[in-house]
Image (cartoon, rainbow, N blue to C red; front, side, top):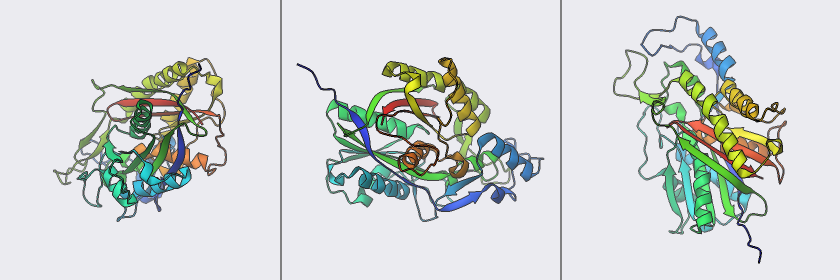
Length: 357
């Protein structure tokens, strides 16, 4: 007797892209300092031009002051639930990936009591007490890790439907005197994961954590402005070390995931990679294809970083949602296409999913 294999797939997606557009020229009057508190000698125009050449970012989105991370997540979740056409009361889990909680403008202390997942459940007005809500802190790969956990819950029989959200308001946790602050942005993306969908199947996944000398490549520290408030902490990073780490380890993780899925590199239609830095993402993809001694196919990697910046856990679900909805003219996915989700971030954590749409 033939055994039926359970398929686990994404049946709906949603995203919320904040309305406040902040362009690179908006930083022309900023006071930038190095990490030793010395003012940057170069003119801001030059600093910004170099920044854009490396990251690809020309503008980014910030949330309105009264829009918290949980509010952004709620709006993305509503869209995903509508797209999936499910009854919200049938959700077994709500997993909210973030790193800083709900932040208010002018304050860097995050609010995580109650959890952001609980806040979203409240905003969705879900009455079912058996819908379990919890948060995921896993750096930028948090949403991908949430999808992996949702798959595990469903495969084990603990769940049939899960809502996975990735959201952040990084604009409220950045040091305005740090050039790296121009990278970060706000946003949220969400997906519904279900058992035995009409189409869609998670073929394989991989997750790794490197926590030796890599553990503090991203960290919290005081402002670079020596005259700033000493007890406030902001997101900081060792950019060069992260770049080298990602280019070394992410391609191998992607290849391992693909090989164990039993899928040929030639079958991959799109790669949805965390929108951290254009040059870094391009280098990762080049090294990934080099493993297979293949050229990089044209239009294999959708990019939203140019206009949306780096919104951490929100980049991949937002990008996937935009492509699914036909809002990126050069990219599309059709039923049966094989795609890869891949991310890297604080921890240092790396993960990947091979997914058949």
